[in-house]
Amino acid sequence: MKAFELLIGEEIIKETGGDCWETPGSLKKQVPGKYIFTNRRIIFVGNGVIEKLRVKFEIPYSEIQSVTPYRVVFFSTGIFIQMKNGDSYRLSLRKRELYISMIRNYMEGTVQDGII
Image 1: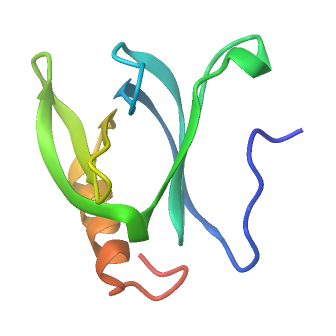
Image 2: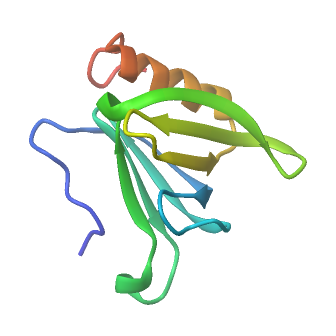
Image 3: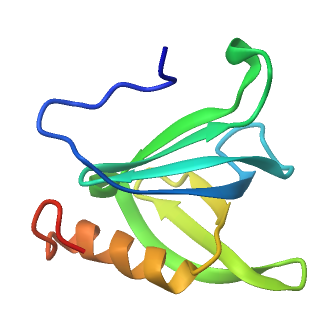
């Protein structure tokens, strides 16, 4: 069984491995996993043997206030996402400029579904 379900009309655009360093509330440590970028949201599913203990979250593009790069330790892989409600996420991905650009385009509605 998948750790997430696609919404009606939602399409997967990109999938990549990466780390999450912060989520709203409790997570403030490195968690490796998989990012799924769809035409509506970012989905993260953390690695782990036990399904119910895996870190999972989704970030709808429509709820993002800003996206900025940041350094993860010494590496230029970090993406800081500030939500409209004040929450924040710290993601870590290779080729972050590609993902920052893609996120911003979806936030602004300048990307046609399925075209990157």
